[in-house]
Image (spheres, rainbow, N blue to C red):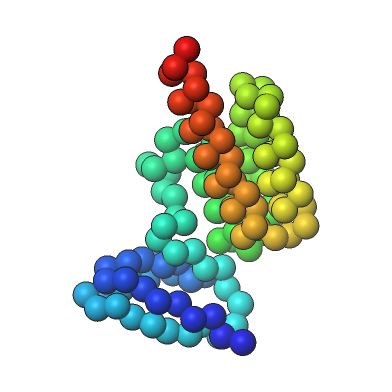
Length: 130
C-alpha cells in the first residue's frame, strides 16, 4: 500500500537521504516502498535544536534517517543522561522514547521525543514564574 503525501507550496520533505522541495503549487504523490520520511514540520536542524530536548530529538532524527538505532547512540545517551539529571521528573518520557528505540520503531521514538520537547517547554515556563 502506497503512502499518499500532499505538500504545500514550497514545503520540504526528506525521503531517505534526499531533501525534496515542492514548487509553487500544492502537490500530491504516492510513495511505494520503504524509506524514512520526514515532513518539514517534523525536521529539526542543528541550528534549530536550541534546547536539550530538541537535541535529543535531533539525535533520534539522525538515527531514523540513517535507519540504524546505533547511529550516534553515544551522543543520544549522553544527552538523555544530562537531561534526566537536570529534570528527574522527565524519566517517564525518556523511558517511552527508549522503549521505542529498543523496539526498533524510531519514527514513534521521534513522536515520543516531541512530548519531551513539550514537557521541557512546560518546565521552563514554570521556572520563569518562580
